[in-house]
Image 1 (tube, rainbow, N blue to C red):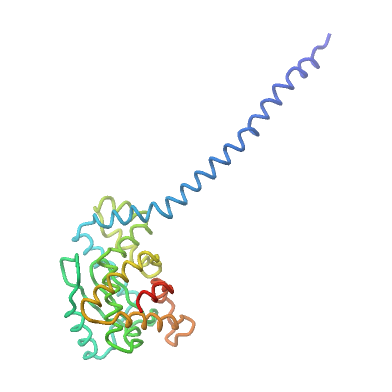
Image 2: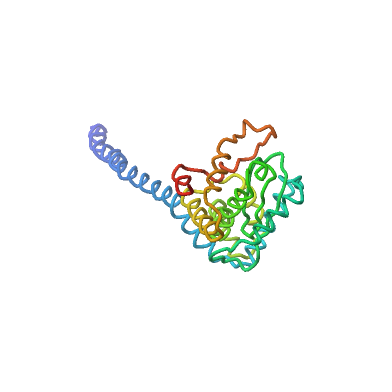
Length: 267
């Protein structure tokens, strides 16, 4: 007698049960996937900036100097050319900056203000972690008063004092390649840093921190904070596609976004 049909009929329920198990696991797996994705996004959005802020404060000043000098050499070779501003104008701005009283400064050495011309960068200024602040000729030409340039410098000094540039480098390079393997190789950070500072955008909170420092510096030196608001408003009308100099690198406002509440606080 052939019992094969009975065997098949007996096996059928087992197969059905086996096939039902993956379907039963689908919902939990989807939930786990969503939760994991949310944790990764939250870690990237909030966790890495917090860790970068803490790590930036722990980097020794000597390493910060090495990183900043390396960054400047790379940027100066690729983006900038010697300034075309009259020496008298440069000296006047440098003397005015040197006379400023800087409240709560944490840097062990003086700031170095460098003027540069560039066909790629329009009106712009950037602060490197080592305390070098680069100002383009175009920004000086855009300013209507020396106080407006000083106000921009005060804001950039705020970025250095709060180590914002170093934070950006760390959080945009996988936490600075684990802070260049516990600060064993600062050259690794210097290599990646120029692109980060030219293209990355400071957050609103970071900009407010730099603004607060700038306002304190301006107030301590009897300079009206409205000067900073005026040049920011003027910069807002200088768009890359409207420039006659063919600028192609991000503008000042691309890396230092201006918001209405920031301008209101500066007026």
